[in-house]
Amino acid sequence: MHANEIIAHKRDERGMTIAELSRRTGIDYEALRVSLAGNRKLTGDELVSLCRVLNLDLADFITQTV
Image 1 (cartoon, rainbow, N blue to C red):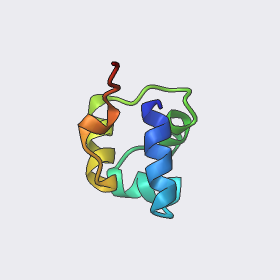
Image 2: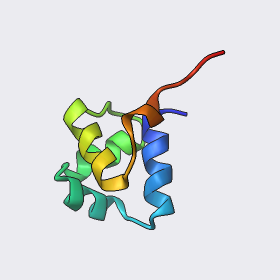
Image 3: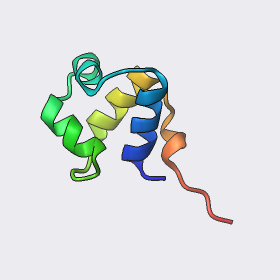
Image 4: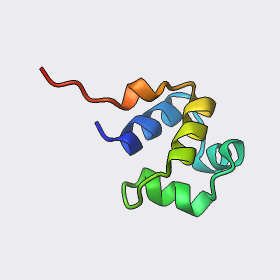
């Protein structure tokens, strides 16, 4: 699962709109919308802000292979 999918899933679980997530993180709405659609990469700062608001750990984004 890609980072944008993990974030979108967690946002949906919390019943949060993109607009609300944008306000809480300080990330520009359009940049966040495009990122969650998979058409723009998140910056490191954006990812950290999203993790704080959505209570995610950076480890949630590490893919383990066997």
